Length: 65
Image (cartoon, rainbow, N blue to C red; front, side, top):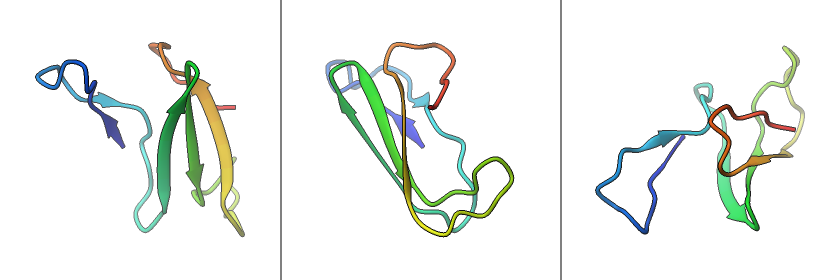
């Protein structure tokens, strides 16, 4: 999943989530954080349902929690 800065559309796309095939993923931003709603496997375990992660928007390294 890539993001484009809407304030500077000619800027490069930024990779924020490296997903898996056939996985659903929605990314939103709010008050300095990115929120990811996904059903991707987690810690090597298949997810039975969707779950929510967040990471600081301006972080060079995404530490999803």
